[in-house]
Image (cartoon, rainbow, N blue to C red; front, side):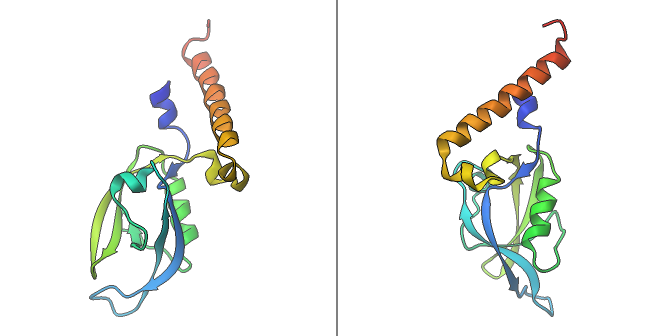
Length: 144
């Protein structure tokens, strides 16, 4: 059940981001991108070695229109947790591919109040797990 739960829901990288236009070597015009403003501890970005200040210009070769934050967020949320993606990161004037394994989007990512109240966030996450487990158990062992 835990493994199924970890793969259920929306994908999440675990970064704060702002819109930016960047020049990429070899390209004529600046392109929309996102600059990483925050790395959330224990999430996919930290595990992949991403750093604050790095610039993301694409995921799996896909770029976004300006402003890029919302299309990027939607692209990630449309994927399932545990999905491996290749992020194109502008580092030292060149594009590098960084593999990131998405995690499950936490409740506090969509609820600022929960983000500011860690105890309530843990409780909400526990409630979400228990509800999932009850449904999972009913599906896999209807007699239980």
